[in-house]
Amino acid sequence: MKKIQRKTMLYKTGVEYGDYTMNHTQGCSHGCKYPCYAFLMAKRFGRVKTYEEWKRPVIVENTLELLDKEIPKLKEKISSVHLCFTTDPFMLGYNEIKQMSINSIKKLNQEGIKCTVLTKGLLPIELTMLSKENEYGITLVSLDETYREKYEPGASMYKDRIESLFQMHKAGFKTWVSIEPYPTPNIVTQDIYKILSEIAFADKIIFGRTNYSKEISSYKKNKEFYNNEAQKVIEFCNEKNINYHIKKGTVTSNSSE
Image 1 (cartoon, rainbow, N blue to C red):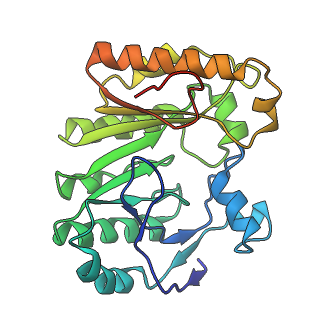
Image 2: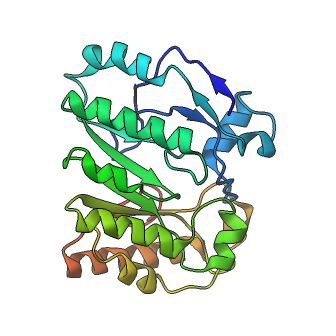
Image 3: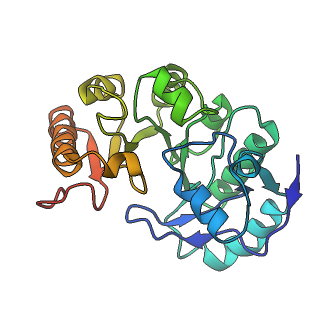
């Protein structure tokens, strides 16, 4: 696969629940069409020109060398490193990316740095050999495979995604699920309780609305819808003793925290 080099790797994230992050790949074969914020930004700043180019990921070949340089400088400032915010560390069919992700996590763990992981691919079993402090997550916004094929065309099937997360849970790791960007009923009709029941073993659930979408904007009751769905998540998590985080802007009335 195509390779590029970068000058830096670790950086402070602006996401409210994150710390430091790394993106050791440019592009993502999952090709999500919510639309994908990472793709929109990459196109805006000229890193890619087209959607098809975005779906052909390129790996940062000097990732491990950059970590060797940056970890000593940032080690005392870092609580955790997230993989990844603008790409996917375990996209399907890319073993070279998978191995770079595992090696990066291993290197960070060796320096006492916890990693958090989020994927729409599958969490490889090799992760169970790494630090028990790591936390592993999947994105899950539906159980409807017709929806996935349209909006997450290159991502793993939902049942396989859930199963890979459950294996991490069984191995004793903290697990989490990002239900974001959650679609409105004009896109797909579904019962959020069915999704929540499939992931009731998780330690944390993050819920957030879909942004940058004309389909969402055209749904006149979208604010009411997200307020109601967020409340369902909160009530479910409280009942099951699951930690939760409602993303900023999802609830438009009272605070959800």
